[in-house]
Image (tube, rainbow, N blue to C red; front, side):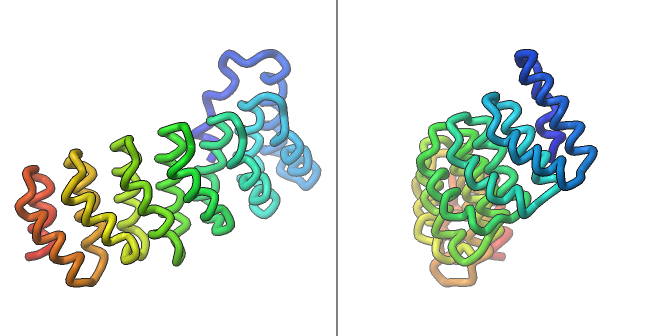
Length: 215
């Protein structure tokens, strides 16, 4: 988890730089007192320190980190929010599902919305498809693509109407391609009919994927 944060510290002030070095030392130490200190550093004034401490805490104390991750989903800094979103998926924190669903449609950061889709897919569960489906209407094609891809890994049944709209209306072939893959996981006449229609899609890759499913 920490590898994604290896670039932190560049351009930080001296206080933040010291705190980042402390986080790394605490992570390596790994004892209870170190985890307690890491939890405290999750509230540091520096966003880089908060994000790095959160990831380090998740490495060493999952249960303690879960509460901090949930709090960090509302952090004003996008780096901290994005780190929390990724960790929620990595740790499969079901308690964060509702908030991730909200973030998928309302976070101002495109990157955070994309990560929310990925994490919702990783967490799964009975509500996953309903929480993911609104992401198929996002203005950013990368968010729509990540959402369709995530739906292929969960019970996508509740999202079939949204996936069919995507096949018919989305201007991006890569999004329609992922929608075909998601629909292929659903055993219903409606899903199959949508895939059969995609076999005549204007994009060759989408057509090939659809035809490989209906064969």
